Image (cartoon, rainbow, N blue to C red; front, side, top):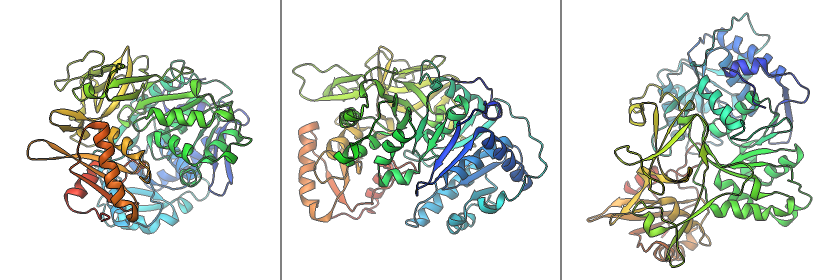
Length: 556
């Protein structure tokens, strides 16, 4: 059950030292490192002492670019115990596009004002490039040497609930990454909501399993949930899931995992890659929560996943849990009701273009299926507002606004805070509507494509295109460009050169049939061309910019 604490540090210090409970990290080779909570606490104290000895003080920002899960988590907690503010940054897996990667990391380091960057030996060449670009950066530390020996004398600084715990930089899908200031109070409030009776309603038998990247808010949330909820947690390498998706399911079986989460694309990937022999002997009856968030949720992805895993005892009708959240509100904002089937809303696609989520009827020509992301947590509020930030009624599409103790104070050292935070409310920039308190998310305001006065949501077009044979699923971008009279639709999809001509024709036909639109241009680009965020999301605005600048290499 959730144990009351005012801060993450307090929770870690007070967590009961029970046998078999702690953090388990599985390497790409299958080797395990298990730390009991007593060992985690002692290691956090030791690392806090070393970081202080390296000249870091309470309030300093420490950039973390650490590819190994156990090293990342222990360094993060050590910094937190010392009152130092961790700044998680994604590690690059390869040296491809190294210049662009160094630019992004340099931007984050500068935006955070980090004097010190902690990394690992194998990342040193890349981080030395960053060191030459980020003017505020004074030194690099390596995990292999920074924590040698017993910790020196160390006096723990006071940590209160309003202390900033860490800076969570946004993924950069809609703008350059900005650092969200997450306080201990925000963290505790969100964990209490997520783990409590109106959330996951955790119990003493729960075990969490995650392959999500730890530098991302949803992946890091598994660390916080484990500590604040006194849960055993298992962490798998993110890259291993990408190569072999079935390891997620195998880990759930091996460790008797009861709670797990993943973005929409992961459910699609497992369904696509899983073979009959992978299902043989797989028992997932004990899984009671399979959450979905971090990106737009497609009903078909979840339903197909549930059907595919039916023979394993996986009960999709009770287990699947769509949710909605963002770093600016710590993590989660709404949860679907635990233990109940997902709620679908079939709406008239033409009415949606005008901002009206009208239920589809028997004679509706085009319909959309949207997934409910549930209701806000107790003590939190949610509203749908128009461009003047006035509340809208049910089934009217507008901007999602939220209020409550999970809402953070804003972006660190950024004037853009005033654009999104006002009078305790966070204006998310996301579009959605409500039905009897349930939230349905439609997309981003700035990504909306408006053609002849009608609104078109890019992810709907992208999903329709992704269903075409030989289009790489998840590798499609739709956006609008200003035309002489109205916006015009551009579609960019990854594919192979030999399929390019046929794909252009198929994509044009599908969009015409589904949406009554004629794309101005369909671009088929080589696999790996589309820019992505650190969390793997395709960057629509960056793709649009590349298209406008003639930087996309198209198959002819």
